[in-house]
Image (cartoon, rainbow, N blue to C red; front, side):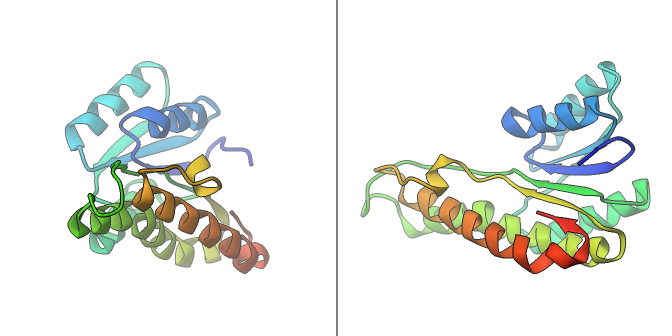
Amino acid sequence: MDPNNKVALVTGGASGLGLALARALGARGATVILADRDLSAAEGAAQTLQKQGISADYLGCDVASAQQFGEIVTEVMARHGAIDILVNNAGVALGGTSGEINLKDWQWIVDVNLMGVVHGVEAVVPIMRKTGGYIINVASLAGLHANPDMGPYNATKFAVVGYTEGLQQELAGANIGV
């Protein structure tokens, strides 16, 4: 995948791994759009990338909301005319043993870590079926090897790995790399 002259939408792009991935794509010529629930952090990160000579934009988005994800995809298309690369990176974690983590926290982790990925894929696949593209779903080693006291995180990351493997097969003939 050559990111030069491509448009890359990176969730959780204001910090950590998301920002590092955006920086790497931008350094290779992509225009990067940082989507993050913390709009001011996304703005600051985009400005930092711009000072490094990277074409960067930012938008606020809670990936747990299918509506918000759809809205930012529409906005990226309006501003940049394409989404060639989607990096589903946004994620949250909360430790605790079974019986300690309440169901509200379980739901929050599932909504961000798993459904955020689903929302992203569902929003961009119709576009990418016409234009081609790449989808990168970030999981973690917890998606391959469970850790104690991390039940919700483990479960969502295993789910992302399984979803991604199936998606790769599903979209193989559609000019969409996963």
